[in-house]
Length: 94
Image (cartoon, rainbow, N blue to C red; front, side):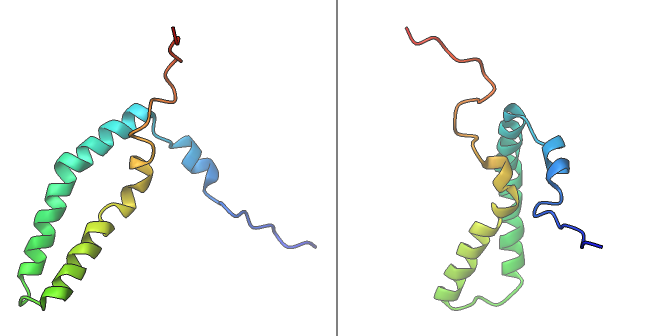
């Protein structure tokens, strides 16, 4: 008996079938930036206001960490959005 081979990417077929199109990623990223980010900022400020004000340097570190953390779950959505549409037909260079 040979041991079962573990796939390095077990969800590869699921993620390929659920891939967003370029237009969908652009629309979703716009929605995240215009609606989600202000809500995240408001929630972060509200939660931080519940505690006593920390020392200045610690407060800066908290805001920097929170500023990076919001984008991590959406990395796949934002990836390649600023580039040209890969599915668009090529333009003639005249």
